[in-house]
Length: 461
Image 1 (spheres, one colour):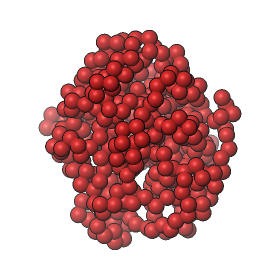
Image 2 (spheres, one colour):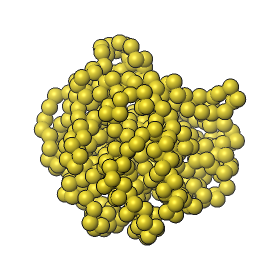
Image 3 (cartoon, one colour):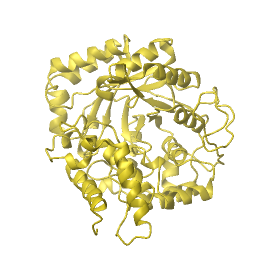
């Protein structure tokens, strides 16, 4: 199985598998307001097109799905009058309205997203639109302990219908399959839940049945031995994970995609930006991109790559801000597939990134809440931003030591309250089995804390 994950496909083979040729590209940068004609970087963007979205057809249902899908894991939040955090429903409504107006029709949520608030917020926003204007995807998120019984699964399934305010679900997923075959059987087979979902599909309450994958290739392969024609599968795919997925936390996307094509299963793509890291690449990588397309953002490069293979149904993006939504609409309205020359650039970028110091966190927040109050994703995000900026210090003798030290420590305190920083991790390991990337979170917390402590004490590295 290990050999499958190391299978080598060069960039020319990627284009052959993707089914594209060489095309020209154009550059654009996008603004942060729905009526902006000037980007945050000062460039003119013109109108965001409403009628040029790229669509893909699901061969099993005939659904015409927008290549840009809305990931609803990270809706904007606000503080209410009682000082408590909640979803900013007004902003969610505005984002959903704008997305639908500009051709986006696939919305992906789950019962566990945003501390359980995502389905409700998504349902409120979508209920204001005709039912045939959108496809809703949600999941049976029974991967946590205590929720694996048949009744717990049925309760979660029925609650999704209530929270989403729908009488059928377009795309329903077995959530986060991949830990082990034993774990899959416990969650879906032995308790009868898979049989139940197949009956629900036959009854029309589920239109397309699929699964999302994180983990071991043995489990991925096992899913095709069950005698089920899956309608879709959600995988992690981006230009780094194509050949350099973080083993054993994931499997190279080249293998996953090829197997899905072989079994006639359309692919839904998650993590096209790898938790945002591909949107904030380091200076060395960014220089390579800018030499070819000076006006294009790293995010545009990543989204074009993720949407290029022709058997991909939709690419999910968790767009919290209007500027992100606008940029991604422009990228896919219409899609300009990556070229052989651009793939050569991305191959060089990938080599830079895989040899960097990033913590492989995608900020999915599955590890939250931490019982000791640590903001795990925020700690890793701050560290990764420092890596992207090329400011991780190797020695107290580095030329930029004083500036980089100050930037890290001040930025750390601003982005993560002191009581929620890495030094409060006790290594309880409660978070580890919850991480779909299989990160050794306590170990990485110690690494970040050691780095911060060395800076605070002005110690040698």
